[in-house]
Amino acid sequence: EAGKKEAKKDEASYDIGLQDTEKGVVTRFPPEPSGYLHIGHAKAALLNDYFAHKKYNGKLILRFDDTNPLKEKQEFEDAIVKDLELMGIKPDVCTHTSDYFQELYDECVKLIKSGGAYADNTPQEILRDERMKKIDSKCRGMSIEESLKHFEEMKEGTEEGQKWFIRAKINMQDLNGAMRDPVIYRCTPEPHHRTGSTWKCYPTYDFACPVVDAVEGVTHALRTTEYNDRDAQYQWFLKACGLRHVYNWNFARMAFVRTFLSKRKLTKIVDNGSVWGWDDPRMPTVRGIRRHGMTIPALQEFILQQGPSKSITLMDWTKFWATNKKFIDPVAARYTAIESKDKVSCTVAGAPAAPRSEMKDKHAKNSDLGKKKVVFSKNIILDQADAQSFAQDEEITLMNWGNAIVRNITHSLNPMGLLPGPPPKVTSLDLELHLQGDVKTTKKKVTWLSTDQELVPVKLHDFDYLLTKDKLEDDDDFEKFLNPNTEAVTECLADCNVADLKEDDIMQFDRKGFFRVDRAFKNGEAAAFFQIPTGKQNK
Ligand code: ATP
Ligand code: MG
Ligand code: MG
Image (tube, rainbow, N blue to C red):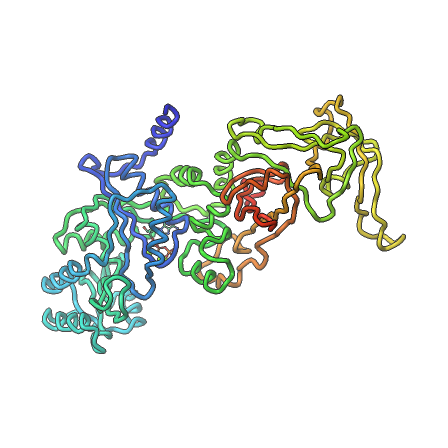
Protein backbone atom coordinates (compact mmCIF):
# COMPACT_ATOMS: atom_id res chain seq x y z
CA GLU A 1 0.00 0.00 0.00
CA ALA A 2 2.72 2.39 1.07
CA GLY A 3 4.69 1.60 -2.06
CA LYS A 4 1.65 2.27 -4.17
CA LYS A 5 1.14 5.65 -2.55
CA GLU A 6 4.78 6.49 -3.11
CA ALA A 7 4.46 5.61 -6.80
CA LYS A 8 1.28 7.73 -7.08
CA LYS A 9 3.02 10.70 -5.56
CA ASP A 10 5.90 10.21 -7.93
CA GLU A 11 3.64 10.09 -10.95
CA ALA A 12 1.72 13.15 -9.91
CA SER A 13 4.88 15.16 -9.73
CA TYR A 14 5.55 15.54 -13.44
CA ASP A 15 4.84 19.20 -13.83
CA ILE A 16 3.16 20.24 -17.02
CA GLY A 17 1.61 23.62 -16.52
CA LEU A 18 -1.82 23.09 -18.06
CA GLN A 19 -3.90 26.26 -17.93
CA ASP A 20 -7.15 26.70 -16.01
CA THR A 21 -7.28 23.19 -14.61
CA GLU A 22 -9.42 24.18 -11.65
CA LYS A 23 -12.42 24.31 -14.00
CA GLY A 24 -11.96 20.62 -14.73
CA VAL A 25 -9.86 18.68 -17.21
CA VAL A 26 -11.13 16.70 -20.16
CA THR A 27 -8.56 15.27 -22.58
CA ARG A 28 -8.90 13.01 -25.56
CA PHE A 29 -6.79 10.48 -27.42
CA PRO A 30 -7.83 10.60 -31.09
CA PRO A 31 -6.26 7.74 -33.08
CA GLU A 32 -7.19 7.13 -36.66
CA PRO A 33 -8.23 3.45 -36.89
CA SER A 34 -5.86 2.79 -39.78
CA GLY A 35 -3.27 0.63 -38.02
CA TYR A 36 -2.15 -0.71 -34.67
CA LEU A 37 -0.81 1.63 -32.01
CA HIS A 38 2.91 2.31 -32.11
CA ILE A 39 4.97 3.67 -29.23
CA GLY A 40 4.46 7.23 -30.45
CA HIS A 41 0.73 6.72 -30.03
CA ALA A 42 1.43 5.11 -26.68
CA LYS A 43 3.08 8.34 -25.61
CA ALA A 44 0.07 10.42 -26.66
CA ALA A 45 -2.34 7.99 -24.99
CA LEU A 46 -0.36 7.78 -21.74
CA LEU A 47 0.05 11.56 -21.50
CA ASN A 48 -3.66 12.17 -22.04
CA ASP A 49 -4.48 9.50 -19.49
CA TYR A 50 -1.96 10.95 -17.07
CA PHE A 51 -3.44 14.44 -17.20
CA ALA A 52 -7.04 13.30 -17.07
CA HIS A 53 -6.75 10.58 -14.47
CA LYS A 54 -3.57 10.92 -12.44
CA LYS A 55 -2.66 14.58 -12.29
CA TYR A 56 -6.20 15.97 -12.31
CA ASN A 57 -9.47 14.33 -11.46
CA GLY A 58 -10.74 14.62 -14.99
CA LYS A 59 -12.04 12.63 -17.90
CA LEU A 60 -10.42 10.90 -20.86
CA ILE A 61 -12.20 10.47 -24.17
CA LEU A 62 -11.08 7.84 -26.65
CA ARG A 63 -12.15 9.23 -29.98
CA PHE A 64 -11.67 7.32 -33.18
CA ASP A 65 -10.79 9.88 -35.76
CA ASP A 66 -12.51 8.10 -38.61
CA THR A 67 -12.89 10.74 -41.28
CA ASN A 68 -11.08 8.89 -44.04
CA PRO A 69 -13.13 5.90 -45.21
CA LEU A 70 -10.32 4.71 -47.49
CA LYS A 71 -7.91 3.69 -44.72
CA GLU A 72 -10.04 2.72 -41.77
CA LYS A 73 -11.13 -0.70 -40.54
CA GLN A 74 -13.00 -2.21 -37.60
CA GLU A 75 -10.05 -4.57 -37.01
CA PHE A 76 -7.89 -1.59 -36.13
CA GLU A 77 -10.47 -0.11 -33.78
CA ASP A 78 -10.69 -3.37 -31.88
CA ALA A 79 -6.91 -3.61 -31.69
CA ILE A 80 -6.58 -0.05 -30.38
CA VAL A 81 -9.15 -0.66 -27.62
CA LYS A 82 -7.23 -3.77 -26.59
CA ASP A 83 -3.85 -2.08 -26.68
CA LEU A 84 -5.08 0.75 -24.46
CA GLU A 85 -6.41 -1.81 -22.03
CA LEU A 86 -3.01 -3.52 -22.02
CA MET A 87 -1.41 -0.20 -21.13
CA GLY A 88 -3.79 0.20 -18.21
CA ILE A 89 -5.62 3.08 -19.86
CA LYS A 90 -9.36 3.19 -19.24
CA PRO A 91 -11.10 5.88 -21.28
CA ASP A 92 -14.27 7.19 -19.66
CA VAL A 93 -16.04 7.27 -23.01
CA CYS A 94 -15.37 6.03 -26.50
CA THR A 95 -16.64 8.11 -29.40
CA HIS A 96 -16.11 8.50 -33.13
CA THR A 97 -15.64 11.61 -35.17
CA SER A 98 -18.24 9.99 -37.43
CA ASP A 99 -20.79 10.31 -34.60
CA TYR A 100 -20.65 14.02 -35.39
CA PHE A 101 -20.89 13.97 -39.18
CA GLN A 102 -24.27 15.68 -39.00
CA GLU A 103 -23.02 18.41 -36.60
CA LEU A 104 -19.92 18.90 -38.71
CA TYR A 105 -21.97 19.17 -41.85
CA ASP A 106 -24.24 21.72 -40.18
CA GLU A 107 -21.25 23.74 -38.96
CA CYS A 108 -19.83 23.76 -42.46
CA VAL A 109 -23.11 25.00 -43.92
CA LYS A 110 -23.24 27.71 -41.24
CA LEU A 111 -19.67 28.69 -42.00
CA ILE A 112 -20.43 29.00 -45.73
CA LYS A 113 -23.55 31.02 -44.96
CA SER A 114 -21.60 33.43 -42.77
CA GLY A 115 -19.03 33.92 -45.53
CA GLY A 116 -16.39 31.96 -43.62
CA ALA A 117 -15.99 29.21 -46.21
CA TYR A 118 -16.29 28.67 -49.96
CA ALA A 119 -16.31 25.88 -52.52
CA ASP A 120 -13.25 25.41 -54.69
CA ASN A 121 -12.19 23.04 -57.47
CA THR A 122 -8.61 24.17 -58.08
CA PRO A 123 -6.41 21.17 -58.97
CA GLN A 124 -4.15 20.09 -56.08
CA GLU A 125 -0.85 21.13 -57.66
CA ILE A 126 -2.11 24.59 -58.46
CA LEU A 127 -3.68 24.97 -55.04
CA ARG A 128 -0.38 24.11 -53.38
CA ASP A 129 1.45 26.58 -55.57
CA GLU A 130 -1.08 29.34 -54.95
CA ARG A 131 -0.91 28.74 -51.24
CA MET A 132 2.87 29.03 -51.31
CA LYS A 133 2.73 32.23 -53.34
CA LYS A 134 -0.19 33.70 -51.35
CA ILE A 135 -2.39 33.90 -54.44
CA ASP A 136 -6.17 33.80 -54.07
CA SER A 137 -7.98 30.97 -55.79
CA LYS A 138 -10.30 31.99 -58.63
CA CYS A 139 -13.10 30.61 -56.42
CA ARG A 140 -12.36 32.77 -53.39
CA GLY A 141 -14.99 35.31 -54.36
CA MET A 142 -17.69 32.74 -55.07
CA SER A 143 -21.13 33.66 -53.80
CA ILE A 144 -22.62 31.93 -50.77
CA GLU A 145 -25.42 30.47 -52.90
CA GLU A 146 -23.03 29.00 -55.40
CA SER A 147 -20.79 27.54 -52.70
CA LEU A 148 -23.81 25.95 -51.02
CA LYS A 149 -24.87 24.47 -54.34
CA HIS A 150 -21.44 22.82 -54.79
CA PHE A 151 -21.51 21.57 -51.21
CA GLU A 152 -24.88 20.00 -51.96
CA GLU A 153 -23.35 18.22 -54.99
CA MET A 154 -20.54 17.01 -52.75
CA LYS A 155 -23.05 15.70 -50.26
CA GLU A 156 -24.76 13.74 -53.04
CA GLY A 157 -21.38 12.47 -54.22
CA THR A 158 -22.20 13.26 -57.85
CA GLU A 159 -19.52 13.25 -60.50
CA GLU A 160 -19.56 17.03 -60.40
CA GLY A 161 -19.50 17.05 -56.60
CA GLN A 162 -16.36 14.91 -56.59
CA LYS A 163 -14.47 17.73 -58.28
CA TRP A 164 -15.16 20.12 -55.41
CA PHE A 165 -14.01 20.74 -51.87
CA ILE A 166 -14.72 23.38 -49.25
CA ARG A 167 -12.10 25.80 -47.89
CA ALA A 168 -12.24 28.03 -44.86
CA LYS A 169 -11.87 31.67 -45.85
CA ILE A 170 -9.20 32.81 -43.41
CA ASN A 171 -6.32 34.82 -44.83
CA MET A 172 -4.28 34.02 -47.94
CA GLN A 173 -1.71 36.65 -46.94
CA ASP A 174 -1.01 35.22 -43.49
CA LEU A 175 2.65 34.47 -42.73
CA ASN A 176 1.44 31.20 -41.27
CA GLY A 177 0.66 28.87 -44.17
CA ALA A 178 -1.89 26.97 -42.07
CA MET A 179 -4.08 30.08 -42.18
CA ARG A 180 -4.14 30.28 -45.96
CA ASP A 181 -7.64 28.91 -46.51
CA PRO A 182 -7.29 25.27 -45.38
CA VAL A 183 -9.51 22.60 -46.92
CA ILE A 184 -12.29 21.59 -44.52
CA TYR A 185 -14.49 19.20 -46.52
CA ARG A 186 -13.81 16.70 -49.26
CA CYS A 187 -16.00 14.49 -51.38
CA THR A 188 -15.16 10.76 -51.09
CA PRO A 189 -17.93 8.52 -52.42
CA GLU A 190 -16.46 5.29 -50.92
CA PRO A 191 -18.54 3.72 -48.14
CA HIS A 192 -17.40 4.40 -44.58
CA HIS A 193 -16.76 1.50 -42.19
CA ARG A 194 -19.34 2.83 -39.73
CA THR A 195 -21.71 5.15 -41.54
CA GLY A 196 -21.84 3.14 -44.76
CA SER A 197 -23.06 5.19 -47.70
CA THR A 198 -24.93 7.81 -45.63
CA TRP A 199 -22.22 10.36 -46.30
CA LYS A 200 -20.34 11.09 -49.47
CA CYS A 201 -18.37 14.02 -48.12
CA TYR A 202 -16.15 14.08 -45.09
CA PRO A 203 -14.59 16.80 -42.91
CA THR A 204 -10.80 17.08 -42.84
CA TYR A 205 -8.89 16.64 -39.62
CA ASP A 206 -8.22 20.39 -39.45
CA PHE A 207 -11.91 21.14 -39.27
CA ALA A 208 -13.26 18.10 -37.41
CA CYS A 209 -10.73 18.32 -34.62
CA PRO A 210 -11.63 21.72 -33.12
CA VAL A 211 -15.36 21.29 -33.73
CA VAL A 212 -15.61 17.86 -32.14
CA ASP A 213 -13.24 18.82 -29.30
CA ALA A 214 -15.50 21.74 -28.41
CA VAL A 215 -18.72 19.75 -28.82
CA GLU A 216 -17.43 16.94 -26.62
CA GLY A 217 -16.34 19.31 -23.87
CA VAL A 218 -12.59 18.74 -24.24
CA THR A 219 -10.75 21.36 -22.17
CA HIS A 220 -7.17 20.69 -23.29
CA ALA A 221 -6.31 19.33 -26.72
CA LEU A 222 -2.88 17.72 -26.59
CA ARG A 223 -1.06 17.47 -29.87
CA THR A 224 2.47 16.90 -31.05
CA THR A 225 4.58 19.98 -31.72
CA GLU A 226 4.30 19.75 -35.50
CA TYR A 227 0.82 21.14 -34.94
CA ASN A 228 2.22 24.38 -33.44
CA ASP A 229 1.54 26.19 -36.70
CA ARG A 230 -2.00 24.89 -36.83
CA ASP A 231 -2.98 26.08 -33.36
CA ALA A 232 -3.98 29.49 -34.76
CA GLN A 233 -6.20 27.83 -37.34
CA TYR A 234 -7.75 25.60 -34.65
CA GLN A 235 -8.57 28.67 -32.58
CA TRP A 236 -9.96 30.44 -35.66
CA PHE A 237 -12.44 27.59 -36.23
CA LEU A 238 -13.64 27.73 -32.61
CA LYS A 239 -14.29 31.46 -32.94
CA ALA A 240 -15.77 31.40 -36.45
CA CYS A 241 -18.20 28.65 -35.44
CA GLY A 242 -18.98 30.31 -32.11
CA LEU A 243 -17.84 27.26 -30.14
CA ARG A 244 -16.50 26.79 -26.59
CA HIS A 245 -12.85 27.58 -25.97
CA VAL A 246 -10.36 24.70 -25.89
CA TYR A 247 -6.69 25.02 -24.95
CA ASN A 248 -4.01 23.66 -27.23
CA TRP A 249 -1.07 22.03 -25.50
CA ASN A 250 1.78 20.56 -27.48
CA PHE A 251 4.36 17.93 -26.67
CA ALA A 252 7.31 16.40 -28.51
CA ARG A 253 6.75 13.68 -31.04
CA MET A 254 8.54 10.48 -30.13
CA ALA A 255 11.30 9.27 -32.44
CA PHE A 256 13.66 6.30 -32.16
CA VAL A 257 16.73 5.31 -34.13
CA ARG A 258 16.60 2.50 -36.68
CA THR A 259 12.86 2.25 -36.87
CA PHE A 260 9.92 4.35 -38.06
CA LEU A 261 6.86 5.48 -36.20
CA SER A 262 4.59 5.86 -39.15
CA LYS A 263 1.51 3.81 -39.78
CA ARG A 264 1.96 4.11 -43.51
CA LYS A 265 5.42 2.54 -43.43
CA LEU A 266 4.50 -0.03 -40.81
CA THR A 267 1.49 -1.07 -42.88
CA LYS A 268 3.77 -1.47 -45.86
CA ILE A 269 6.18 -3.88 -44.15
CA VAL A 270 3.30 -5.87 -42.70
CA ASP A 271 1.69 -6.12 -46.14
CA ASN A 272 4.89 -7.00 -47.99
CA GLY A 273 5.86 -9.72 -45.52
CA SER A 274 9.06 -8.13 -44.19
CA VAL A 275 7.73 -8.91 -40.71
CA TRP A 276 5.32 -11.54 -39.38
CA GLY A 277 2.60 -9.03 -38.57
CA TRP A 278 1.71 -6.04 -36.40
CA ASP A 279 2.85 -7.91 -33.29
CA ASP A 280 6.23 -8.93 -34.69
CA PRO A 281 8.87 -8.34 -31.98
CA ARG A 282 10.79 -6.10 -34.38
CA MET A 283 7.82 -3.77 -34.80
CA PRO A 284 7.74 -0.55 -32.74
CA THR A 285 4.08 -1.23 -32.04
CA VAL A 286 2.70 -1.67 -28.54
CA ARG A 287 2.17 -5.34 -29.38
CA GLY A 288 5.58 -5.70 -30.95
CA ILE A 289 7.54 -4.31 -28.03
CA ARG A 290 5.51 -6.37 -25.59
CA ARG A 291 6.26 -9.50 -27.58
CA HIS A 292 9.90 -8.43 -27.47
CA GLY A 293 9.64 -8.42 -23.67
CA MET A 294 8.90 -4.80 -22.80
CA THR A 295 6.71 -4.56 -19.72
CA ILE A 296 3.90 -2.06 -19.32
CA PRO A 297 5.13 -0.43 -16.07
CA ALA A 298 8.49 0.16 -17.73
CA LEU A 299 6.83 1.66 -20.81
CA GLN A 300 4.76 3.96 -18.61
CA GLU A 301 7.78 5.10 -16.64
CA PHE A 302 9.87 5.63 -19.74
CA ILE A 303 7.21 7.73 -21.44
CA LEU A 304 6.09 9.76 -18.46
CA GLN A 305 9.69 10.64 -17.70
CA GLN A 306 9.85 12.52 -20.98
CA GLY A 307 6.59 14.10 -19.92
CA PRO A 308 5.98 17.55 -21.23
CA SER A 309 9.25 18.11 -23.04
CA LYS A 310 8.74 19.90 -26.34
CA SER A 311 12.09 19.18 -27.92
CA ILE A 312 12.13 16.25 -30.29
CA THR A 313 15.11 14.02 -29.77
CA LEU A 314 15.95 10.97 -31.76
CA MET A 315 16.30 8.42 -29.00
CA ASP A 316 18.40 5.33 -29.07
CA TRP A 317 16.99 2.25 -27.41
CA THR A 318 19.44 2.10 -24.50
CA LYS A 319 17.33 3.85 -21.92
CA PHE A 320 14.12 2.24 -23.12
CA TRP A 321 15.43 -1.25 -22.48
CA ALA A 322 17.45 -0.29 -19.41
CA THR A 323 14.22 0.96 -17.82
CA ASN A 324 12.64 -2.39 -18.59
CA LYS A 325 15.55 -4.29 -17.07
CA LYS A 326 15.00 -2.48 -13.79
CA PHE A 327 11.51 -3.99 -13.68
CA ILE A 328 12.25 -7.53 -14.86
CA ASP A 329 15.57 -8.25 -13.14
CA PRO A 330 14.09 -8.67 -9.64
CA VAL A 331 11.29 -10.97 -10.82
CA ALA A 332 12.79 -13.03 -13.66
CA ALA A 333 13.45 -16.61 -12.56
CA ARG A 334 16.86 -18.01 -13.48
CA TYR A 335 17.42 -21.11 -15.56
CA THR A 336 20.25 -22.66 -17.55
CA ALA A 337 20.69 -23.37 -21.25
CA ILE A 338 23.63 -24.84 -23.15
CA GLU A 339 24.08 -24.40 -26.89
CA SER A 340 23.25 -27.63 -28.68
CA LYS A 341 25.74 -27.09 -31.45
CA ASP A 342 29.17 -28.42 -30.41
CA LYS A 343 28.11 -28.87 -26.81
CA VAL A 344 30.88 -30.56 -24.82
CA SER A 345 30.23 -33.70 -22.82
CA CYS A 346 32.18 -33.87 -19.58
CA THR A 347 32.67 -36.37 -16.84
CA VAL A 348 32.94 -35.00 -13.35
CA ALA A 349 35.11 -37.01 -11.01
CA GLY A 350 33.95 -36.70 -7.42
CA ALA A 351 30.30 -36.16 -8.38
CA PRO A 352 27.69 -38.36 -6.73
CA ALA A 353 27.74 -41.88 -8.19
CA ALA A 354 23.98 -41.74 -8.73
CA PRO A 355 22.35 -38.51 -9.91
CA ARG A 356 21.13 -36.41 -7.00
CA SER A 357 18.76 -33.48 -7.18
CA GLU A 358 18.21 -30.50 -4.96
CA MET A 359 15.51 -27.84 -4.86
CA LYS A 360 17.07 -24.40 -5.21
CA ASP A 361 15.65 -20.88 -5.34
CA LYS A 362 14.74 -19.79 -8.87
CA HIS A 363 16.22 -16.39 -8.04
CA ALA A 364 19.04 -15.97 -5.52
CA LYS A 365 17.63 -12.66 -4.30
CA ASN A 366 13.92 -13.38 -4.54
CA SER A 367 12.77 -16.57 -2.83
CA ASP A 368 9.13 -15.64 -3.55
CA LEU A 369 9.62 -16.96 -7.06
CA GLY A 370 9.81 -20.51 -5.71
CA LYS A 371 12.16 -23.40 -6.25
CA LYS A 372 13.55 -25.31 -9.18
CA LYS A 373 15.16 -28.72 -9.44
CA VAL A 374 18.91 -28.81 -9.96
CA VAL A 375 20.43 -32.19 -10.89
CA PHE A 376 24.02 -33.03 -9.94
CA SER A 377 25.70 -36.00 -11.59
CA LYS A 378 28.86 -37.28 -13.25
CA ASN A 379 27.64 -36.46 -16.74
CA ILE A 380 27.28 -32.85 -17.68
CA ILE A 381 27.43 -30.68 -20.79
CA LEU A 382 29.10 -27.30 -21.26
CA ASP A 383 29.07 -24.61 -23.93
CA GLN A 384 31.80 -25.10 -26.55
CA ALA A 385 33.10 -21.55 -26.12
CA ASP A 386 33.61 -22.09 -22.39
CA ALA A 387 35.35 -25.43 -22.87
CA GLN A 388 37.64 -23.95 -25.53
CA SER A 389 38.82 -21.32 -23.10
CA PHE A 390 40.02 -23.86 -20.53
CA ALA A 391 43.66 -24.79 -19.92
CA GLN A 392 44.92 -28.08 -18.58
CA ASP A 393 44.79 -28.11 -14.75
CA GLU A 394 42.98 -24.79 -14.57
CA GLU A 395 40.59 -24.35 -11.66
CA ILE A 396 37.18 -23.16 -12.79
CA THR A 397 33.77 -22.72 -11.15
CA LEU A 398 30.66 -24.68 -12.11
CA MET A 399 27.99 -22.12 -11.24
CA ASN A 400 25.79 -23.03 -8.28
CA TRP A 401 27.86 -26.15 -7.64
CA GLY A 402 31.48 -25.32 -6.85
CA ASN A 403 35.00 -25.44 -8.20
CA ALA A 404 36.47 -28.10 -10.43
CA ILE A 405 39.88 -28.69 -11.97
CA VAL A 406 40.26 -29.34 -15.69
CA ARG A 407 42.08 -32.65 -15.92
CA ASN A 408 41.89 -33.74 -19.50
CA ILE A 409 40.88 -31.98 -22.71
CA THR A 410 40.22 -33.90 -25.92
CA HIS A 411 40.23 -31.93 -29.16
CA SER A 412 38.88 -32.81 -32.58
CA LEU A 413 41.43 -33.36 -35.31
CA ASN A 414 42.09 -30.42 -37.57
CA PRO A 415 40.22 -31.34 -40.77
CA MET A 416 43.00 -29.56 -42.70
CA GLY A 417 45.67 -31.95 -41.42
CA LEU A 418 48.83 -30.09 -40.56
CA LEU A 419 47.79 -26.98 -42.49
CA PRO A 420 46.42 -24.08 -40.46
CA GLY A 421 42.68 -24.50 -39.94
CA PRO A 422 39.94 -23.43 -37.61
CA PRO A 423 40.77 -23.72 -33.89
CA PRO A 424 40.17 -27.30 -32.86
CA LYS A 425 36.87 -28.06 -31.16
CA VAL A 426 36.81 -29.59 -27.71
CA THR A 427 35.08 -32.95 -27.98
CA SER A 428 35.21 -34.03 -24.37
CA LEU A 429 36.51 -32.96 -20.99
CA ASP A 430 37.39 -34.59 -17.71
CA LEU A 431 36.78 -32.45 -14.65
CA GLU A 432 37.56 -33.18 -11.06
CA LEU A 433 35.41 -31.55 -8.40
CA HIS A 434 37.32 -29.41 -5.95
CA LEU A 435 34.51 -28.19 -3.71
CA GLN A 436 36.86 -26.85 -1.07
CA GLY A 437 38.20 -24.38 -3.67
CA ASP A 438 37.20 -20.73 -3.30
CA VAL A 439 34.74 -19.64 -5.99
CA LYS A 440 35.94 -16.06 -5.55
CA THR A 441 39.40 -16.85 -6.88
CA THR A 442 38.43 -18.39 -10.23
CA LYS A 443 38.26 -16.38 -13.43
CA LYS A 444 35.77 -18.59 -15.22
CA LYS A 445 32.31 -19.27 -13.86
CA VAL A 446 30.51 -21.47 -16.32
CA THR A 447 27.01 -22.78 -16.77
CA TRP A 448 26.52 -26.53 -17.02
CA LEU A 449 23.71 -29.04 -17.16
CA SER A 450 23.54 -32.61 -15.97
CA THR A 451 22.39 -34.91 -18.76
CA ASP A 452 20.68 -37.07 -16.16
CA GLN A 453 17.45 -35.07 -16.49
CA GLU A 454 14.90 -34.43 -19.23
CA LEU A 455 16.64 -31.61 -21.05
CA VAL A 456 14.28 -29.26 -22.89
CA PRO A 457 15.02 -28.20 -26.49
CA VAL A 458 14.69 -24.44 -26.89
CA LYS A 459 15.33 -21.92 -29.64
CA LEU A 460 16.69 -18.54 -28.61
CA HIS A 461 15.70 -15.78 -31.04
CA ASP A 462 17.65 -12.55 -31.06
CA PHE A 463 16.25 -9.66 -33.11
CA ASP A 464 17.94 -6.73 -34.75
CA TYR A 465 16.67 -3.29 -35.79
CA LEU A 466 14.39 -2.87 -38.79
CA LEU A 467 16.64 -0.27 -40.40
CA THR A 468 20.33 -0.13 -41.22
CA LYS A 469 20.35 3.65 -40.86
CA ASP A 470 19.82 5.59 -37.63
CA LYS A 471 17.68 8.35 -39.02
CA LEU A 472 15.72 8.33 -42.24
CA GLU A 473 15.72 11.61 -44.10
CA ASP A 474 12.49 12.83 -45.62
CA ASP A 475 13.51 11.92 -49.15
CA ASP A 476 14.95 8.50 -48.26
CA ASP A 477 13.15 5.51 -49.70
CA PHE A 478 12.83 3.61 -46.43
CA GLU A 479 12.64 0.24 -48.15
CA LYS A 480 16.23 0.68 -49.31
CA PHE A 481 17.33 0.77 -45.70
CA LEU A 482 15.41 -2.25 -44.44
CA ASN A 483 17.80 -4.52 -42.58
CA PRO A 484 17.91 -7.84 -44.49
CA ASN A 485 19.00 -9.87 -41.44
CA THR A 486 16.99 -9.17 -38.37
CA GLU A 487 16.79 -12.55 -36.68
CA ALA A 488 19.41 -14.94 -35.29
CA VAL A 489 18.34 -18.28 -33.83
CA THR A 490 20.46 -20.38 -31.46
CA GLU A 491 19.38 -23.90 -30.58
CA CYS A 492 19.95 -24.91 -26.98
CA LEU A 493 19.14 -27.50 -24.39
CA ALA A 494 17.66 -26.15 -21.17
CA ASP A 495 17.20 -27.56 -17.68
CA CYS A 496 14.14 -29.71 -16.94
CA ASN A 497 12.28 -26.89 -15.15
CA VAL A 498 11.97 -24.95 -18.40
CA ALA A 499 9.30 -27.42 -19.54
CA ASP A 500 6.90 -25.73 -17.10
CA LEU A 501 7.32 -22.19 -18.41
CA LYS A 502 4.31 -20.62 -20.11
CA GLU A 503 3.88 -18.28 -23.01
CA ASP A 504 4.61 -14.68 -21.97
CA ASP A 505 6.77 -15.64 -18.98
CA ILE A 506 9.84 -13.46 -18.62
CA MET A 507 12.94 -15.24 -17.32
CA GLN A 508 16.70 -15.32 -17.51
CA PHE A 509 19.09 -17.95 -18.78
CA ASP A 510 22.22 -17.54 -16.69
CA ARG A 511 24.92 -15.74 -18.68
CA LYS A 512 22.70 -15.60 -21.77
CA GLY A 513 20.34 -12.85 -20.75
CA PHE A 514 16.65 -12.16 -20.34
CA PHE A 515 14.03 -13.82 -22.49
CA ARG A 516 10.31 -13.83 -23.02
CA VAL A 517 8.66 -17.17 -23.73
CA ASP A 518 6.94 -16.83 -27.06
CA ARG A 519 5.96 -20.49 -27.44
CA ALA A 520 6.02 -22.87 -24.51
CA PHE A 521 7.50 -26.39 -24.72
CA LYS A 522 4.81 -28.76 -25.95
CA ASN A 523 4.63 -32.18 -27.58
CA GLY A 524 8.41 -32.45 -27.71
CA GLU A 525 8.61 -29.40 -29.97
CA ALA A 526 11.32 -26.86 -29.10
CA ALA A 527 10.13 -23.88 -27.09
CA ALA A 528 10.74 -20.40 -28.56
CA PHE A 529 12.39 -17.70 -26.45
CA PHE A 530 12.84 -14.07 -27.54
CA GLN A 531 15.90 -12.26 -26.22
CA ILE A 532 14.98 -9.09 -24.32
CA PRO A 533 17.49 -6.30 -24.88
CA THR A 534 18.79 -4.76 -21.68
CA GLY A 535 20.20 -1.56 -23.07
CA LYS A 536 23.75 -2.82 -22.66
CA GLN A 537 24.37 -3.97 -26.20
CA ASN A 538 22.91 -0.64 -27.24
CA LYS A 539 19.83 -2.42 -28.44
P1 ATP B 1 1.07 8.09 -38.03
O1 ATP B 1 1.99 9.01 -38.76
O2 ATP B 1 1.77 6.94 -37.40
O3 ATP B 1 -0.09 7.68 -38.87
P2 ATP B 1 -0.74 9.89 -36.85
O4 ATP B 1 -0.47 11.09 -36.05
O5 ATP B 1 -1.23 10.14 -38.22
O6 ATP B 1 0.54 8.98 -36.81
P3 ATP B 1 -3.08 9.17 -35.37
O7 ATP B 1 -3.78 7.87 -35.27
O8 ATP B 1 -3.79 10.30 -35.96
O9 ATP B 1 -1.73 8.90 -36.14
O10 ATP B 1 -2.48 9.58 -33.95
C1 ATP B 1 -3.19 9.54 -32.73
C2 ATP B 1 -2.47 10.40 -31.76
O11 ATP B 1 -1.14 9.94 -31.56
C3 ATP B 1 -2.35 11.83 -32.23
O12 ATP B 1 -2.70 12.67 -31.15
C4 ATP B 1 -0.92 12.00 -32.60
O13 ATP B 1 -0.47 13.28 -32.39
C5 ATP B 1 -0.24 11.01 -31.68
N1 ATP B 1 1.04 10.53 -32.24
C6 ATP B 1 1.24 9.92 -33.42
N2 ATP B 1 2.54 9.65 -33.62
C7 ATP B 1 3.20 10.09 -32.52
C8 ATP B 1 4.58 10.12 -32.11
N3 ATP B 1 5.55 9.63 -32.87
N4 ATP B 1 4.87 10.66 -30.90
C9 ATP B 1 3.90 11.15 -30.12
N5 ATP B 1 2.60 11.17 -30.44
C10 ATP B 1 2.24 10.66 -31.63
MG1 MG C 1 -3.46 11.67 -37.59
MG1 MG D 1 -0.32 9.71 -40.20
